[in-house]
Picture 1 (cartoon, rainbow, N blue to C red):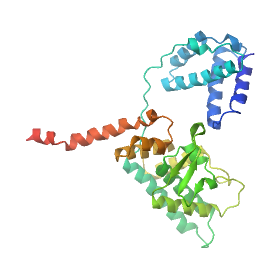
Picture 2 (picture 1 turned 30 degrees about the vertical axis):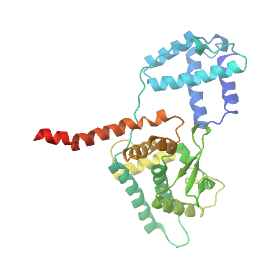
Picture 3 (picture 1 turned 90 degrees about the vertical axis):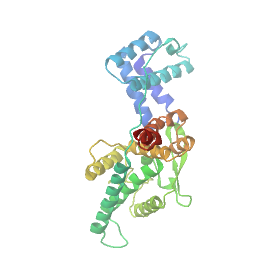
Length: 317
């Protein structure tokens, strides 16, 4: 079997029996396509060796891919090889003989300051208030322009309140919001569903107002957040909304939806939340992922100590 055919059959077979998001399939498809191009489409699957894999890793390094990107591509290729071992096509995985060193991979989460986060939320509220005054013609009817401003406010407020990933918020359906329990059912990564509890009364009010407004529009979509076509709002659509808020609020640096997740996690730890509570809050499978945020909170701790520690004042005297 040639690599091109093996890759196509793997993507079809593996993702039909595993609970992964379409985004994961796209990433695997891109990584395997890159490997097939490097090796050659007509290369036999059985000829893939440890040497070929190590040569590809070296090539990626020469092309200045980050250690994290190389590691992700190797994970995709490892799963691909393991799949064909289980199918009996490969006698063993070539990864059993592979030795790779990616260097130290440490990518600290990028969080917003409290001032930046407050500016985004204030901008969202201001936009909705403006549209509400300008667009409302009849008390019982809401225009889509006004709905869109309310949707944008509800989205940014939800991302900060729950720490949801942008894909998780885009995937929310109307029935995922349990009003009485004030909780969202979130479809997490790797099929790990979790509950996102709303503890802020203002967030509850905004989400209920959005839900009532969403019911005013006829659509076959089950999506909680609608786009202009009355269909599910995409992750790119959410990123565009945040980018527009950033410009309107006068914030200069690039801001992504994922930074809101980093921000709430950082502030929770800074305010004394237990790291295992934050792990459950974010839906991390491993606490090691959550521990990345402790580097940022340590920086805050050191800054406070440098400013307030009594030994510094005593030495000054």
